[in-house]
Every structure is written in structure tokens, then in C-alpha cells.
Length: 264
Image (cartoon, rainbow, N blue to C red; front, top):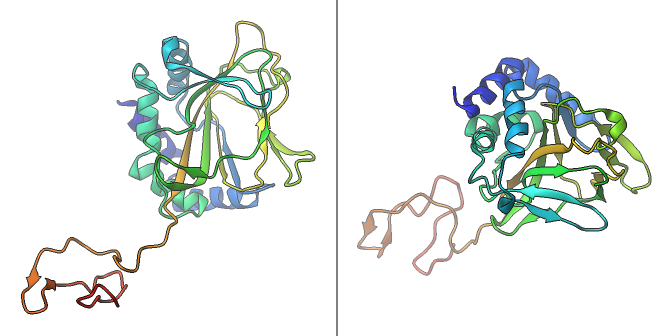
């Protein structure tokens, strides 16, 4: 069975019913400091293991280094030689998953990012950290607004004493509210907030042969206003010779009919 289908089958077996999605929605809405959902065993163990193994075999040329504000981590969004990760993206960008995520997180019309802007694999080693920050809110490549963030973790046998836990801080960035260790196969999803401060600020203290690894993907909404001079409509095929304009300019979206000058 393909990686994407394994993930979707696993997901819907565990959390596919209406009652289960409602329970997740309750958890998401009432987790402080802003809507957040953390789930263990989100993907099958064998897929998590394959991701971990693949993250060690991707050639160096596909990795970049992130260094801002004394943070440090390695990133890879070019999945040319990462078939397991491509399967994960196929699942997490699928219509089935987007529908499920929209229902659980109360966000309609979610869009994935095929460019994986700021997304993909991420790795941190001993001494690395990601300082507390708030996320970017605009995807220039897709011209869309950030709505949700999702991180999958898959480091086996991670010891919480090594730090690396994903921390969410209060709106004043004065103290930690909640944190999630990067456990094998777990996921954290949270709603974008302009004061949504998070990171793993404490330097990692894992052994030299260990590393913290995960995979990120972000979701967006196209929250823009339509040009009133060209409102949404279906394809316009037929032509009215008397009016010298296409038929059916009064479209089903209820934006009204335009006159011959293109005005309402």
C-alpha cells in the first residue's frame, strides 16, 4: 500500500467518525494559549520509521541551513530524492485530509502549499535551538494567508531531558504555557495568531549520534476581495448578438449582472 493511503487509512480508522472529530474539535478550541491540537500515533509507526531513515539519506545538496536570532536548524523542502516524504505530502495535501482538517479546526476553504514554503524536513542536533517567534502570515508564492501549521515528529526514543520540546508561550512572550515533546509519530497542529509565540528555545542536549527531526507543512486561505468589475463566474460560452455580450453574466454566486459597460 502506498505511503499516502497508509496515512489516510490510519487517520480515519482512529479519528474518522463524526463523534471523534467533534471531540478533537473541542480539544483544539480549548487548548491554551490559542487553538492547538496534539495527537500521539498520528501516522503509522512504520511510516514514522521510514521518514526518520530517509532524513539521514537525503544528499547534502538538498539541505539548507536556517540561522536567525541565534537559532540553528537544517531544512529540506526539495523532495526529489525523498519518496517517503513525497507520500506524506500527498496524504497531507489530499482532498480527504483537507476536509478532515477543516472540520476539526473550524477553518473552511483550506489550501495546501505545493511549493512547501518554509516547510519540509527539519533537523536539529546537539546545541541547536529555535528561538521563540511568531510565524509568517503571508505566502508570497501562493498569494495566500497563513491559517494553520502542522508538524510531524519521528525521532525514535527521544528523551525529554534532552529538551527540544515545542513550546507555546503567552501573548506577552513572558512565560511558557504548554509544551510538546517531539515523540515518535506525534503531530502538533495550531492556528495562526499574530502573537502566537512558539519555538524550542533551550539548546538541545542529546547525544552526538541523535538528532531532533520532523516534517512541517502549512495551510492557507485565499482571503481576498473580488474585483467588482470582474466578479466570479463560470466559463462563458454563449454569445448574445443583440446585447453584444455573453449570456448568463448573472452568475450563480449572486454577484449580480453587468451592463454593456461592465458595470452593475
